[in-house]
Length: 93
Image (cartoon, rainbow, N blue to C red; front, side, top):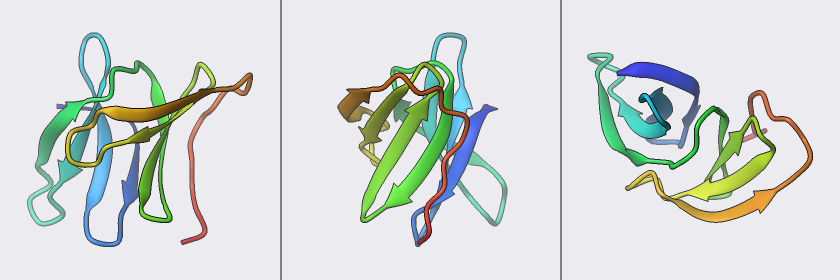
């Protein structure tokens, strides 16, 4: 697996995006071994930001899309388009 753009801490696990030839996948990172486990396809290319906020995982694509990601499957569950170009994410948690 190749890192895809960002990672975040949920309070109990590290999640990161990994790059395939067509899109970014959500992966769980084992902090002991460094191994990543693919959880599923986000269906977006260039996911440049991940943030865990208020119990939800948010993804930010550089084309201006914000989406909520199911942390078990990597699937986007809600999407909002903006005119902003995203390049990272963080929260105050």
